[in-house]
Image (cartoon, rainbow over all chains, first blue to last red; front, side, top):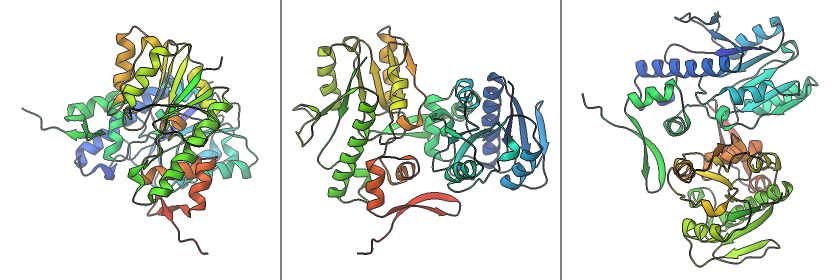
Length: 211
Length: 211
């Protein structure tokens, strides 16, 4: 079994909620190394990554380029044409590893969903892509559960914090510095980010690098 | 196998980071119903809850009362006297369920740890409690991994978002309203809390209750 993993990816000006601590150029590099961590995990689980975006970029992996930047329209145009099992995994999940992905694709249900923080959807595995469509944005987890139900598809929710942890805001960087093992953690450290503890609360701080 | 589950619990003025949206009385009720959800999950996994606190309260479950409110001192005085396997689970994990707890206590390692958000530790399962001590507060996850390592104990990290999600702040309530199934979710709904979506971001709001 070797399902394709669709990975939506935005090259230009990604992760704007990190603007307070990362420049646009740094955010673009950071998004790219997070993508590489996700690709690494996907391959490690013996799956084939397919990067879905509006612009081509330098990579040896398969890329699908689409005109439309709307995530739902893009994916919903791909799903009906897909042959065999497929999963969609977000590019901002640098804690993803082969073990957590295997739990998803090993489901005995028709669909497996990993919720993201804040009611979102981080991973969806679909055995018959023709029978499902996606509806991201907002509390998409509940929407996807309902879409599966309406289509008569059984659905398993996979309980994984590694796939639940999307990196959007400054406080999320704590998770990456504590639990990350890949390139994106190394990149944060290279930029001078460290875990801090203030009044018992854990956070991150960017230290000035001495040249 | 029926390990005891130690559940540290603070009756008076708990969850102060929720003061912005809950009165002290409401926070006390909320902490109590979260505890009840955790106890339910623990029993559902065939384990025996033991509530650890400084004050006795009305409950049919076993309670250990201690003079000292310091979590580390309290637990480190209990661990050496414990016979057989034990686990420590926080009382603010209302998404806990039997399945996630079974993954913890089913480890083949000497120790299993579930990290909490922000570098904390939400659950520790210890096969030989005499060989371990706890060090909560701050980035305790990394401290506990090191304590295990120093004691020559093998350690498995359990990848569960249900046990990873501790409820401390307003934004955490989204998780409970989306994924909760027990009394604490019902209590939030009773108070008028609903999931909201504003500019694509999911949050919670407390609606005025019409009498």
